[in-house]
Length: 231
Ligand SMILES: N[C@@H](CCC(=O)N[C@@H](CS)C(=O)NCC(=O)O)C(=O)O
Image 1 (cartoon, rainbow, N blue to C red):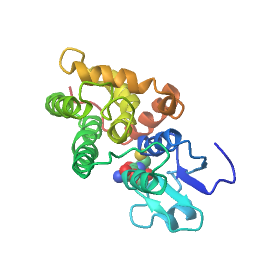
Image 2 (image 1 turned 90 degrees about the vertical axis):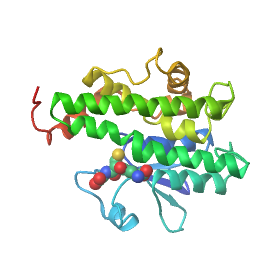
Image 3 (image 1 turned 180 degrees about the vertical axis):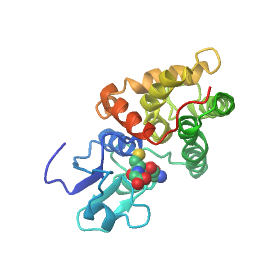
């Protein structure tokens, strides 16, 4: 990415939340500089920029105060550059709906994958998979309403919810392989399954999605803290 840009992104390629912001920046064709963070030994810059959560991503825009939290960063970019590929819809009610589902995705849906990884017994894992099935059915219904028969949540083009959920697809598929599960099952949730295929091949996301090796390293590190399976 461009050097000496007025926009800098503190992050790591191995974070879906960072990938989310990169996806949005790419869609908007905004030049930015990646500042790679080592989460195992956090930099002074990160600690000073995000003293509350101490997490990536953090967006630095020229000499303005840092902006933290991926959804907030995307909202900021959309307000700052509305003429460059608008992500949120123009109608307030539609915007409210996007934010509702974005919050659901981050607070209810995606955390199930962390829970699945952390849960050590087979029955517990099966119970979480059931919750995943229910959750994706809700997302399928949300997709049907939001897409209006078109390709993306945003209709003909990738928009806000496509970015918010799309950044997780690669991670979800990797988790599915490890846990013998198929989140985007074509029979159970045909529309969302088709959507996932389409978004994953979008150039703005493909170019920031981590490869299998990076994912394997991250999952390996996370699993260091996981007790052995209790089958
Ligand atoms: N809600 C945050 C989540 C960000 C997040 O969880 N970042 C992780 C990397 S994927 C992180 O920085 N973890 C470091 C830590 O927890 O200490 C967002 O949307 O930006």
